[in-house]
Length: 316
Image 1 (cartoon, rainbow, N blue to C red):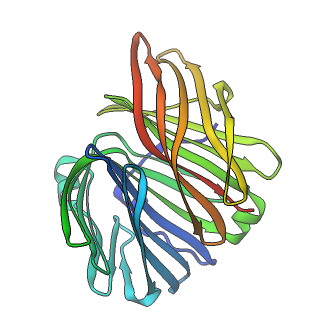
Image 2: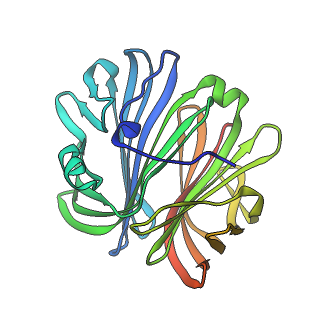
């Protein structure tokens, strides 16, 4: 069972590495007007040398509209270790409101991303408590399991005023050795009801075993780490896509009980659209999925019928 801990802003700051390692910040969101987005900042560096890539992707009715990438030299990137902040060529890309955090304890991020003629100016405000998992192989913080996301997106001469639900996480210390010895890929996603968010993952071990994870995050309350021995993850249906067989329907269930809390969930995820790309040397599929199911916390049950973003990454 993973050791899951609460976080402070320093956990989402830049960590860097004395070894050649990948580190990235990931943001996504789904809006009520059939738009969704992903903005990512990826670095691949050792000490003060390397590269950084800014990524901006916009979807409409779950299909990709554009995929923009801009590469920077690591020397053109400024970061902090104390809290999340990224500046490229003296332009702020990621700005965390550290003063508001100190005053209120609220997690607020501003994203300003411009690539070619496309711009996103977005503010994400946290609703749920963030968490982190640190291992010798890789570390991961989910700073915003659930957040409001508001702002504007400009593309092709049009300006969209957007308002929806967003998510943010951050990975670091992912080295080539991690990829070669730890896992051969993973599934990851979120499930959201009116007041509960589940962040889940399944790391596919080279030994053939599954490393399952589910963190239940109620709005404005403490998260719950589900015992992986109570979880089942199954790929039920599959389809051919770019000469690969990949899942098209996935089920996730769990039933965990402690002295204080009983949590039970059952979900079916149906893939609607697929966007394929490469993440460094790995194949990557970003899914838009329809999710149906329910979660029960003690005596309260919430039913879910929602669309979310999930991913499948494979090293081979």
